[in-house]
Length: 398
Image (cartoon, rainbow, N blue to C red; front, side, top):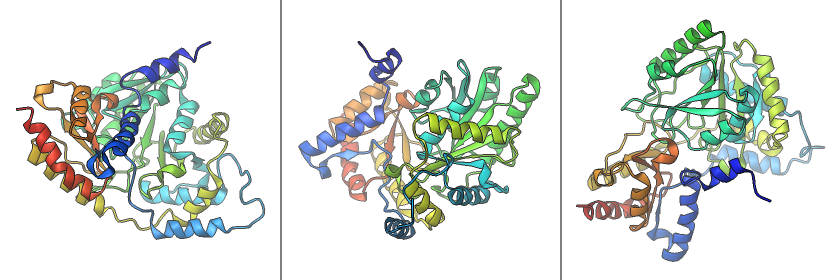
């Protein structure tokens, strides 16, 4: 007997799970050399503590003795929680959203898989600007779909003309992630409007309106006065998927949601399909406990200035070492160019960095060959102490 061939092929692919592999290797290196000597930039694991309001809500709900407080609820989630998420989305998107548009999910990953299950037919395509979050490939293929990678412009903004040229009768969705993982780029309102116009024109011509899926777990984490534009007013068939993993530092609690644009022509059917997919994919429903927690604390004030400070510290260290990088506008990732001496072999260069106990994620896994990603949700000591390691690694290439 053997495991499924598709699963075996995916998990043995050298680009598969590069982030997690590096993270697990970091655990071994820390055990060998000590935590303070290993500079682990591999995993986007938020290290800011959740806001006080979240912790207070956790305490309150832990003591909740209401009857059936830990029981099942409707598959789409508690109505009061869906209402809170509708209110949140109304503020972000600038349109009135009702709870009937919302399905609670097991994190943004569960949300995205439920959406893809709901909208993808075998052979359908999902277009994504590259580079992108590595797991998107798996999420699309889970349901017989194909992720179509369209290279971004040199500044890592989406190439709308290239996306427009890629649209065809098989296009089920265009997936965008802003602020972007791994580049930190925040897509402009002009880009979102141009993309919406391209999708409308394609729908009129082909008779099929692709969904615009907005993966937004980093929406609140922006710098330098940047703002993530709203898409709901610009394109009717748009869907938000998000979570509280990054903005409230709750990645392990796996709580998120899907919100379908109230103007979507088949809104009710999409919501029903996502709810059904949540059930049959085995999630059944989002965690009851944290639905209650976020209902009370979703609008907690958060201070992301530490991430901005670390961004600036890391940029200074990379500049001192002579490593080319993008200036992140949001999220907490630094997208860096592999030195010329390595060509575009990001796998070889991230292996080279291990000699200096620096752990980075190779860009190939993100659809960005020749680049590598550093996650700066790490301690300031890690960044300070890694400065000389980066400099030494680059000097020894000369």
